[in-house]
Length: 110
Length: 317
Image (tube, each protein chain N blue to C red):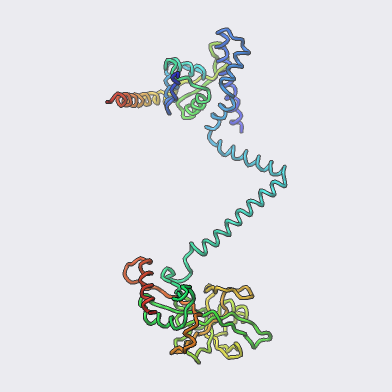
Protein backbone atom coordinates (compact mmCIF):
# COMPACT_ATOMS: atom_id res chain seq x y z
CA UNK A 1 0.00 0.00 0.00
CA UNK A 2 1.37 3.37 -0.97
CA UNK A 3 1.86 5.70 2.00
CA UNK A 4 -0.93 8.26 1.92
CA UNK A 5 -0.13 11.94 2.22
CA UNK A 6 -0.43 13.23 5.80
CA UNK A 7 -3.50 15.20 6.69
CA UNK A 8 -2.80 18.75 7.72
CA UNK A 9 -2.93 19.04 11.47
CA UNK A 10 -5.37 21.71 12.69
CA UNK A 11 -3.65 25.09 12.65
CA UNK A 12 -0.72 23.93 10.52
CA UNK A 13 -2.27 25.19 7.29
CA UNK A 14 -2.48 28.74 8.64
CA UNK A 15 1.14 28.54 9.76
CA UNK A 16 2.28 27.18 6.38
CA UNK A 17 0.48 29.96 4.55
CA UNK A 18 2.13 32.58 6.75
CA UNK A 19 5.51 30.93 6.23
CA UNK A 20 5.08 30.77 2.45
CA UNK A 21 4.44 34.51 2.40
CA UNK A 22 7.41 35.37 4.61
CA UNK A 23 9.72 36.17 1.69
CA UNK A 24 7.41 37.41 -1.03
CA UNK A 25 3.86 38.27 -2.06
CA UNK A 26 2.04 35.41 -3.77
CA UNK A 27 -1.34 34.68 -5.35
CA UNK A 28 -3.43 31.68 -4.23
CA UNK A 29 -1.87 29.18 -6.58
CA UNK A 30 1.58 30.49 -5.79
CA UNK A 31 0.95 29.87 -2.11
CA UNK A 32 -0.15 26.29 -2.81
CA UNK A 33 2.93 25.70 -4.96
CA UNK A 34 5.23 27.24 -2.39
CA UNK A 35 3.83 25.12 0.43
CA UNK A 36 4.30 22.01 -1.67
CA UNK A 37 7.86 23.11 -2.38
CA UNK A 38 8.94 23.93 1.18
CA UNK A 39 7.47 20.66 2.51
CA UNK A 40 9.13 18.62 -0.25
CA UNK A 41 5.74 17.79 -1.67
CA UNK A 42 4.40 16.39 1.60
CA UNK A 43 1.45 18.78 1.68
CA UNK A 44 -0.72 19.46 -1.36
CA UNK A 45 -3.13 22.22 -0.39
CA UNK A 46 -6.50 21.99 -2.14
CA UNK A 47 -8.57 25.03 -3.09
CA UNK A 48 -11.35 23.89 -0.73
CA UNK A 49 -9.15 24.48 2.30
CA UNK A 50 -6.80 27.12 0.91
CA UNK A 51 -9.30 29.84 0.08
CA UNK A 52 -11.29 29.65 3.31
CA UNK A 53 -8.00 29.84 5.22
CA UNK A 54 -6.89 32.86 3.18
CA UNK A 55 -10.18 34.58 3.84
CA UNK A 56 -9.95 33.79 7.56
CA UNK A 57 -6.39 35.10 7.85
CA UNK A 58 -7.18 38.23 5.87
CA UNK A 59 -10.23 38.85 8.03
CA UNK A 60 -8.10 38.44 11.16
CA UNK A 61 -5.76 41.13 9.82
CA UNK A 62 -2.75 38.85 9.36
CA UNK A 63 -2.84 39.05 5.56
CA UNK A 64 -3.39 41.93 3.17
CA UNK A 65 -4.41 41.50 -0.44
CA UNK A 66 -4.26 43.42 -3.69
CA UNK A 67 -4.96 42.75 -7.36
CA UNK A 68 -1.90 42.38 -9.52
CA UNK A 69 -0.55 40.51 -12.51
CA UNK A 70 0.86 37.01 -12.46
CA UNK A 71 4.15 36.15 -14.14
CA UNK A 72 2.02 35.20 -17.17
CA UNK A 73 0.29 38.59 -17.17
CA UNK A 74 -2.93 37.24 -15.74
CA UNK A 75 -4.94 39.36 -13.30
CA UNK A 76 -4.65 37.68 -9.90
CA UNK A 77 -5.27 38.41 -6.26
CA UNK A 78 -2.01 38.60 -4.34
CA UNK A 79 -1.53 38.16 -0.61
CA UNK A 80 1.17 39.55 1.66
CA UNK A 81 1.90 39.50 5.36
CA UNK A 82 0.80 42.47 7.42
CA UNK A 83 2.80 43.52 10.46
CA UNK A 84 0.57 41.59 12.81
CA UNK A 85 0.82 38.66 10.40
CA UNK A 86 4.59 38.81 10.68
CA UNK A 87 4.36 38.84 14.49
CA UNK A 88 1.83 36.03 14.32
CA UNK A 89 4.16 33.97 12.17
CA UNK A 90 6.95 34.41 14.68
CA UNK A 91 4.96 33.40 17.76
CA UNK A 92 3.21 30.56 15.95
CA UNK A 93 6.51 29.25 14.60
CA UNK A 94 8.04 29.26 18.09
CA UNK A 95 5.00 27.49 19.45
CA UNK A 96 5.21 24.92 16.66
CA UNK A 97 8.87 24.33 17.36
CA UNK A 98 8.12 23.54 20.99
CA UNK A 99 5.29 21.20 20.00
CA UNK A 100 7.25 19.36 17.35
CA UNK A 101 10.27 19.00 19.63
CA UNK A 102 8.06 17.64 22.40
CA UNK A 103 6.36 15.26 20.00
CA UNK A 104 9.66 14.08 18.58
CA UNK A 105 10.98 13.43 22.10
CA UNK A 106 7.81 11.63 23.03
CA UNK A 107 7.98 9.39 19.96
CA UNK A 108 11.65 8.56 20.59
CA UNK A 109 11.10 7.76 24.26
CA UNK A 110 11.52 4.15 25.26
CA UNK B 1 -25.86 44.31 -0.16
CA UNK B 2 -23.23 46.20 -2.15
CA UNK B 3 -20.44 44.76 -0.05
CA UNK B 4 -21.84 41.31 -0.57
CA UNK B 5 -21.87 41.70 -4.37
CA UNK B 6 -18.31 42.97 -4.37
CA UNK B 7 -17.25 40.06 -2.20
CA UNK B 8 -18.85 37.58 -4.63
CA UNK B 9 -17.28 39.23 -7.67
CA UNK B 10 -13.83 39.19 -6.18
CA UNK B 11 -14.16 35.60 -5.07
CA UNK B 12 -15.31 34.59 -8.57
CA UNK B 13 -12.44 36.40 -10.18
CA UNK B 14 -9.86 35.05 -7.78
CA UNK B 15 -10.97 31.45 -8.32
CA UNK B 16 -11.15 31.90 -12.09
CA UNK B 17 -7.58 33.15 -12.17
CA UNK B 18 -6.56 30.27 -9.88
CA UNK B 19 -8.01 27.73 -12.33
CA UNK B 20 -6.40 29.46 -15.30
CA UNK B 21 -3.03 29.55 -13.60
CA UNK B 22 -3.24 25.85 -12.87
CA UNK B 23 -4.24 25.20 -16.50
CA UNK B 24 -1.37 27.31 -17.78
CA UNK B 25 1.03 25.06 -15.94
CA UNK B 26 -0.29 22.10 -17.86
CA UNK B 27 -0.22 23.97 -21.15
CA UNK B 28 3.43 24.63 -20.53
CA UNK B 29 3.91 20.88 -20.16
CA UNK B 30 2.36 20.44 -23.63
CA UNK B 31 -1.38 20.03 -23.01
CA UNK B 32 -3.99 21.90 -25.02
CA UNK B 33 -5.66 24.74 -23.13
CA UNK B 34 -9.10 23.15 -23.39
CA UNK B 35 -7.93 19.80 -22.04
CA UNK B 36 -5.98 21.52 -19.29
CA UNK B 37 -9.01 23.58 -18.16
CA UNK B 38 -11.25 20.52 -18.24
CA UNK B 39 -8.78 18.49 -16.20
CA UNK B 40 -8.23 21.21 -13.62
CA UNK B 41 -11.95 21.69 -13.16
CA UNK B 42 -12.46 17.97 -12.70
CA UNK B 43 -9.65 17.75 -10.15
CA UNK B 44 -11.02 20.63 -8.12
CA UNK B 45 -14.44 18.98 -8.06
CA UNK B 46 -16.66 21.98 -8.45
CA UNK B 47 -15.80 25.54 -7.55
CA UNK B 48 -19.22 26.13 -6.00
CA UNK B 49 -18.20 24.02 -3.05
CA UNK B 50 -15.04 26.08 -2.54
CA UNK B 51 -17.06 29.29 -2.77
CA UNK B 52 -19.49 28.05 -0.18
CA UNK B 53 -16.68 27.18 2.19
CA UNK B 54 -15.37 30.74 1.94
CA UNK B 55 -18.83 32.33 2.09
CA UNK B 56 -19.65 30.44 5.28
CA UNK B 57 -16.89 32.33 7.04
CA UNK B 58 -18.41 35.74 6.38
CA UNK B 59 -19.99 37.40 9.40
CA UNK B 60 -23.78 37.58 9.25
CA UNK B 61 -23.97 34.68 6.84
CA UNK B 62 -26.19 32.79 9.25
CA UNK B 63 -28.90 35.45 9.16
CA UNK B 64 -28.61 35.69 5.39
CA UNK B 65 -29.21 31.98 4.84
CA UNK B 66 -31.93 31.97 7.47
CA UNK B 67 -33.69 34.75 5.58
CA UNK B 68 -33.32 32.82 2.34
CA UNK B 69 -34.73 29.68 3.93
CA UNK B 70 -37.72 31.55 5.35
CA UNK B 71 -38.48 33.24 2.02
CA UNK B 72 -38.15 29.95 0.18
CA UNK B 73 -40.46 28.23 2.65
CA UNK B 74 -43.17 30.84 2.25
CA UNK B 75 -42.93 30.73 -1.54
CA UNK B 76 -43.25 26.96 -1.50
CA UNK B 77 -46.19 27.03 0.89
CA UNK B 78 -48.00 29.64 -1.18
CA UNK B 79 -47.61 27.55 -4.32
CA UNK B 80 -49.13 24.49 -2.70
CA UNK B 81 -52.12 25.48 -0.59
CA UNK B 82 -53.27 21.95 0.28
CA UNK B 83 -49.83 20.99 1.52
CA UNK B 84 -49.57 24.21 3.48
CA UNK B 85 -52.92 23.46 5.10
CA UNK B 86 -51.80 19.97 6.11
CA UNK B 87 -48.55 21.36 7.50
CA UNK B 88 -50.37 24.00 9.55
CA UNK B 89 -52.91 21.47 10.79
CA UNK B 90 -50.17 19.05 11.81
CA UNK B 91 -48.31 21.77 13.65
CA UNK B 92 -51.47 23.00 15.36
CA UNK B 93 -52.49 19.52 16.47
CA UNK B 94 -48.97 18.73 17.63
CA UNK B 95 -48.66 21.92 19.65
CA UNK B 96 -52.17 21.53 21.03
CA UNK B 97 -51.63 17.92 22.08
CA UNK B 98 -48.36 18.78 23.77
CA UNK B 99 -49.87 21.73 25.58
CA UNK B 100 -52.78 19.63 26.79
CA UNK B 101 -50.44 16.89 27.93
CA UNK B 102 -48.20 19.32 29.76
CA UNK B 103 -51.16 21.02 31.43
CA UNK B 104 -52.35 17.70 32.82
CA UNK B 105 -48.90 16.53 33.90
CA UNK B 106 -48.16 19.93 35.43
CA UNK B 107 -51.40 19.89 37.41
CA UNK B 108 -51.29 16.25 38.47
CA UNK B 109 -47.61 15.53 38.91
CA UNK B 110 -45.42 18.63 38.93
CA UNK B 111 -47.33 21.22 40.93
CA UNK B 112 -47.68 20.51 44.61
CA UNK B 113 -51.23 20.27 45.94
CA UNK B 114 -52.70 23.68 46.64
CA UNK B 115 -52.87 22.98 50.37
CA UNK B 116 -50.52 24.06 53.14
CA UNK B 117 -47.89 21.42 54.05
CA UNK B 118 -49.17 19.31 51.19
CA UNK B 119 -46.11 17.06 51.45
CA UNK B 120 -47.43 15.88 54.80
CA UNK B 121 -51.01 15.44 53.64
CA UNK B 122 -52.22 11.89 53.12
CA UNK B 123 -55.38 10.09 52.18
CA UNK B 124 -55.85 7.01 54.34
CA UNK B 125 -57.40 3.84 52.98
CA UNK B 126 -58.65 0.63 54.44
CA UNK B 127 -57.63 -2.78 53.22
CA UNK B 128 -60.01 -5.62 53.83
CA UNK B 129 -58.47 -8.68 55.47
CA UNK B 130 -60.70 -11.09 53.62
CA UNK B 131 -60.26 -9.98 49.99
CA UNK B 132 -57.33 -7.54 50.29
CA UNK B 133 -59.21 -4.76 48.46
CA UNK B 134 -58.53 -1.14 49.23
CA UNK B 135 -61.57 0.92 50.08
CA UNK B 136 -62.76 4.05 51.79
CA UNK B 137 -62.97 3.90 55.53
CA UNK B 138 -65.62 2.84 58.00
CA UNK B 139 -66.52 5.37 60.74
CA UNK B 140 -65.43 2.95 63.44
CA UNK B 141 -61.90 2.72 62.05
CA UNK B 142 -61.79 6.48 61.58
CA UNK B 143 -62.57 6.92 65.29
CA UNK B 144 -59.97 4.35 66.33
CA UNK B 145 -57.28 5.86 64.15
CA UNK B 146 -57.97 9.38 65.28
CA UNK B 147 -57.79 8.37 68.94
CA UNK B 148 -54.95 5.86 68.88
CA UNK B 149 -52.49 6.65 66.11
CA UNK B 150 -49.68 8.99 67.05
CA UNK B 151 -48.17 9.52 63.61
CA UNK B 152 -50.66 12.17 62.60
CA UNK B 153 -51.20 15.62 64.01
CA UNK B 154 -54.62 16.04 62.42
CA UNK B 155 -57.20 13.74 60.91
CA UNK B 156 -60.55 14.54 59.32
CA UNK B 157 -63.04 12.80 57.06
CA UNK B 158 -65.46 13.67 54.29
CA UNK B 159 -68.44 11.69 53.05
CA UNK B 160 -69.45 12.82 49.62
CA UNK B 161 -72.81 11.11 49.75
CA UNK B 162 -75.59 13.56 50.53
CA UNK B 163 -77.26 15.57 47.83
CA UNK B 164 -79.53 18.37 48.87
CA UNK B 165 -82.66 19.62 47.22
CA UNK B 166 -82.89 23.33 47.79
CA UNK B 167 -86.52 24.47 48.07
CA UNK B 168 -87.90 27.88 48.70
CA UNK B 169 -87.22 29.77 45.53
CA UNK B 170 -89.42 29.41 42.45
CA UNK B 171 -87.53 26.39 41.22
CA UNK B 172 -86.03 23.56 43.26
CA UNK B 173 -82.29 23.02 42.79
CA UNK B 174 -80.17 19.96 43.30
CA UNK B 175 -76.92 20.76 45.13
CA UNK B 176 -74.07 18.29 45.39
CA UNK B 177 -73.19 18.05 49.03
CA UNK B 178 -70.78 16.46 51.45
CA UNK B 179 -70.65 15.73 55.15
CA UNK B 180 -67.40 16.66 56.86
CA UNK B 181 -66.04 16.09 60.35
CA UNK B 182 -64.83 18.94 62.50
CA UNK B 183 -61.35 20.06 61.52
CA UNK B 184 -61.76 19.20 57.82
CA UNK B 185 -61.34 22.76 56.51
CA UNK B 186 -58.40 23.72 58.77
CA UNK B 187 -56.63 20.53 57.62
CA UNK B 188 -56.81 21.85 54.05
CA UNK B 189 -55.89 25.35 55.17
CA UNK B 190 -59.19 26.89 54.08
CA UNK B 191 -60.24 30.18 55.68
CA UNK B 192 -63.82 31.25 55.12
CA UNK B 193 -64.58 34.04 52.67
CA UNK B 194 -67.60 34.94 54.80
CA UNK B 195 -68.76 33.77 58.24
CA UNK B 196 -67.03 30.96 60.12
CA UNK B 197 -66.04 27.31 60.10
CA UNK B 198 -68.16 24.65 61.82
CA UNK B 199 -67.84 24.54 65.61
CA UNK B 200 -66.84 21.33 67.38
CA UNK B 201 -70.22 21.06 69.05
CA UNK B 202 -71.98 21.29 65.68
CA UNK B 203 -70.36 17.93 64.74
CA UNK B 204 -72.94 16.11 66.92
CA UNK B 205 -76.26 14.52 66.04
CA UNK B 206 -79.12 16.99 66.32
CA UNK B 207 -76.78 20.01 66.33
CA UNK B 208 -75.72 19.87 62.72
CA UNK B 209 -78.46 21.98 61.10
CA UNK B 210 -75.79 24.32 59.68
CA UNK B 211 -74.14 24.50 56.26
CA UNK B 212 -71.16 26.08 54.54
CA UNK B 213 -71.49 27.08 50.87
CA UNK B 214 -68.85 26.86 48.19
CA UNK B 215 -67.96 30.14 46.53
CA UNK B 216 -69.45 28.89 43.25
CA UNK B 217 -72.76 27.88 44.83
CA UNK B 218 -72.96 31.21 46.67
CA UNK B 219 -72.59 33.01 43.34
CA UNK B 220 -74.79 30.70 41.29
CA UNK B 221 -77.77 30.17 43.59
CA UNK B 222 -77.67 33.24 45.80
CA UNK B 223 -76.24 35.89 43.50
CA UNK B 224 -73.27 36.35 45.80
CA UNK B 225 -75.34 38.44 48.20
CA UNK B 226 -73.29 39.75 51.09
CA UNK B 227 -75.85 38.97 53.84
CA UNK B 228 -75.98 35.22 53.12
CA UNK B 229 -74.53 34.25 56.50
CA UNK B 230 -77.39 33.67 58.90
CA UNK B 231 -79.88 32.79 56.19
CA UNK B 232 -82.01 29.73 56.81
CA UNK B 233 -82.23 27.45 53.77
CA UNK B 234 -84.70 24.66 53.26
CA UNK B 235 -82.71 21.62 52.24
CA UNK B 236 -84.45 18.25 51.84
CA UNK B 237 -87.39 19.87 53.61
CA UNK B 238 -85.36 20.68 56.73
CA UNK B 239 -84.08 24.08 57.87
CA UNK B 240 -80.31 24.74 57.77
CA UNK B 241 -78.53 27.95 58.75
CA UNK B 242 -75.73 29.21 56.52
CA UNK B 243 -72.70 29.85 58.72
CA UNK B 244 -69.96 30.37 56.17
CA UNK B 245 -68.85 30.68 52.55
CA UNK B 246 -65.62 29.10 51.27
CA UNK B 247 -63.04 31.17 49.39
CA UNK B 248 -63.02 31.17 45.60
CA UNK B 249 -59.77 29.18 45.34
CA UNK B 250 -60.87 26.37 47.63
CA UNK B 251 -61.12 23.13 45.68
CA UNK B 252 -61.78 19.62 46.83
CA UNK B 253 -62.52 17.46 43.86
CA UNK B 254 -64.95 14.64 44.35
CA UNK B 255 -64.28 11.35 42.68
CA UNK B 256 -67.58 11.18 40.80
CA UNK B 257 -68.88 14.13 38.88
CA UNK B 258 -72.63 14.54 39.02
CA UNK B 259 -75.00 14.75 36.10
CA UNK B 260 -74.37 18.48 35.73
CA UNK B 261 -70.75 17.66 35.02
CA UNK B 262 -69.73 19.35 38.24
CA UNK B 263 -67.02 17.70 40.25
CA UNK B 264 -66.91 20.13 43.11
CA UNK B 265 -69.16 20.28 46.09
CA UNK B 266 -71.76 23.04 46.46
CA UNK B 267 -72.52 22.66 50.10
CA UNK B 268 -71.07 21.11 53.27
CA UNK B 269 -72.70 19.91 56.48
CA UNK B 270 -71.17 18.59 59.74
CA UNK B 271 -71.03 14.79 59.68
CA UNK B 272 -72.23 14.45 63.28
CA UNK B 273 -71.45 10.75 63.71
CA UNK B 274 -73.19 9.32 66.78
CA UNK B 275 -71.02 8.35 69.77
CA UNK B 276 -70.87 5.47 70.47
CA UNK B 277 -71.41 4.18 66.97
CA UNK B 278 -74.48 2.08 66.45
CA UNK B 279 -73.71 -1.43 65.21
CA UNK B 280 -75.01 -0.79 61.66
CA UNK B 281 -72.43 1.98 61.08
CA UNK B 282 -69.55 -0.41 61.76
CA UNK B 283 -70.20 -2.29 58.55
CA UNK B 284 -70.28 0.73 56.21
CA UNK B 285 -67.18 2.18 54.60
CA UNK B 286 -68.13 5.60 53.21
CA UNK B 287 -65.40 7.91 54.51
CA UNK B 288 -62.55 9.51 52.68
CA UNK B 289 -60.04 10.16 55.48
CA UNK B 290 -57.37 12.85 55.25
CA UNK B 291 -54.50 13.12 57.69
CA UNK B 292 -51.48 15.29 58.29
CA UNK B 293 -48.23 13.60 59.30
CA UNK B 294 -46.36 14.92 62.29
CA UNK B 295 -43.00 16.52 61.62
CA UNK B 296 -41.07 14.78 64.33
CA UNK B 297 -37.31 14.45 64.03
CA UNK B 298 -35.65 14.46 60.65
CA UNK B 299 -36.89 11.15 59.32
CA UNK B 300 -37.44 11.10 55.59
CA UNK B 301 -41.00 10.73 54.34
CA UNK B 302 -40.73 7.02 53.32
CA UNK B 303 -39.63 5.88 56.75
CA UNK B 304 -42.29 8.02 58.34
CA UNK B 305 -44.80 6.42 55.98
CA UNK B 306 -43.88 2.92 57.01
CA UNK B 307 -43.84 3.69 60.71
CA UNK B 308 -47.25 5.30 60.27
CA UNK B 309 -48.45 2.18 58.48
CA UNK B 310 -47.25 -0.03 61.31
CA UNK B 311 -48.96 2.08 63.91
CA UNK B 312 -52.15 2.01 61.91
CA UNK B 313 -52.31 -1.76 61.74
CA UNK B 314 -51.61 -1.86 65.46
CA UNK B 315 -54.52 0.49 66.08
CA UNK B 316 -56.83 -1.69 64.04
CA UNK B 317 -55.98 -5.02 65.64
